[in-house]
Image (cartoon, rainbow, N blue to C red; front, side, top):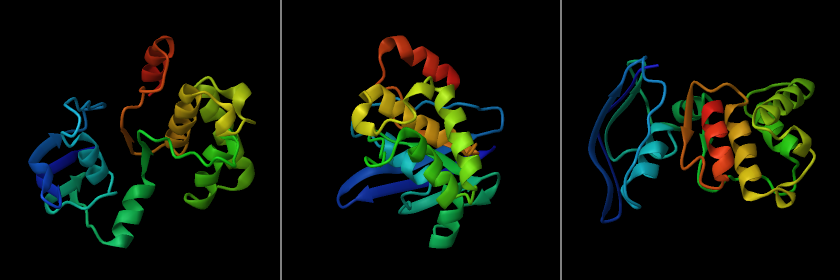
Length: 181
């Protein structure tokens, strides 16, 4: 997939998060890591790329097509992406399997049996097969983060957007999870 940002700017009031960002990634790029200080605009750039924030100026293009920032276009773009941000946004009243299966059903139209099967496979991929019946409060922070990762990849997104994807993981698990991503 080719991704291009041209002159992308975003401000929140007087605070400029992004100033005229230009970035071009061709199909050979499989992974991009943004490194910088806190408050440097990394999360904002990811949110703009994923269609969760609209830039104040500039364009975002995917495979040569400019991303339109109207609601219908954004919804279509968001459905094609997988997201995991610093707060994992798990539903506290649902089990790990249900947290992964629900978006497959509600957003992607997958039938229940198939969504549960895909959810279980995604959880197994991240070493959580035996934790599928647990609610987030019964999981460690690292396990919750891996449930979020499983949810992000379960629908096989064209673009996977991760903000600090290993922040809650034990050092012993970080390399394993990075390889899975």
